[in-house]
Length: 612
Ligand code: F6R
Image (cartoon, rainbow, N blue to C red):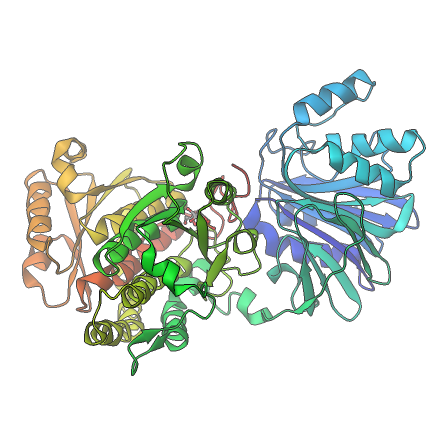
């Protein structure tokens, strides 16, 4: 949520920052801005809308220099207009700040500053930061001391970057709870909200920790302090992401590229995690204490959005395979409901980005109750990976499309593997059973390839549904979550109202929605509730709803009942959520494109939701 970038280097700061902001655009795209220092003069430019608008504004009002900061916004405080766009300056326009996160005590600070005669121009929480610094500097403090003092006044989660015409060879920053990365290459140094924004120029990086602040000198050296102003040391790591991982590679959108990457990703997870001969799953990152895992009596899964849907599937896996009582909680609910827990409860947090504020807050809540937390994350350098007691890498590679696709299937696969891993430790599965499961899992990449080879079928359907106003998704058991996920994907990408229901619940109210104008997606692949799903289909048919079925290959009965049918290669029911979701991802993508929406950047959304 909001992307920030800062740059010192030999290249034109304007063009480098624009490229980086375009790559950070998935974090927010309401407005954008840039501030540059040129021979001690601060220049600020802002525009409402996407980075393209800022680029056009800069063509008319260019800036030059080789030290600067940039911001792409997802509005929290104040609407998306030019005044609220970052960077924000002090009253004398000597310094500029780009900020990600929320200053929770901004209201009190704003009143304090108003009392001192400062005039606020924006509605943002951010504007208190430059004023706090300015105020301290007026008392005679250096900018470094003023920065240190100001961050001691801030409450909330934030990362911000700052430049000042008083110190035109330094990039200042502070970080508490929101991501900020120091990254450097041969002649280029960055502070960035994420790594893909700065490859290939940056070669090594250091993830700035919560509570750290400091500055970068123009020779690239990072000067780092903790909150008490004690100097800190740091170690950089080589950046492993390649430029091709962050490009569309001939696909029209990142989302489509990421949907089509799924066979490759699932294959590499299988290669990395499964040892078929020994019927073992390998989690080299796991906690070493297997006896503790054997004694667990309960697992609580916490996550948000699509990751919550993965958790709903995970509950089935953990209960059926690992035979362990499992609860699923939405992160933002777990945090506030004061859950009753005991020492043999383990919390498993699932997050693609590893930065979701709600999930992070529930991890803190769990740790405050002395629970052990394991995080399944797609970014192992993320705050959630660091704050959990252990983490598992989802191995999906950078996901840039705002709607999660490949990370979801990677989450579901990791959950079944983890359940199987626990089943061995807990002596509740036999080697032969695990071997059988792993050989079925090994078929997944080819099965997904088969589904993707028929993507055109769904593309054609999209023309028929582009005018629909409502959609219903029905699924049972493991595929109730698939129905919820199909509905979420469609509504977030194409703005068509869509709801997912458990098939059995449908007759208890939602069936009233059905008319001949409402398409109903029925997930009816072969499993123990298959016959019951057929009854759902008949009920919809009797009320003239348009029936779209996701059925098992060779199931003529279901295909005949449907107005539109898509066949899924036969698989064991446990694995069906991984295959069944793929046509639903494609449906939401193609309907979104047909309606002229922007699937990579749906309105009002952002990829990393770093505010609660
Ligand atoms: C929907 C989507 C979101 C995220 C949610 C949690 O397509 O991507 O619902 O799943 O914001 O994000 P993570 O997994 O990063 O914690």
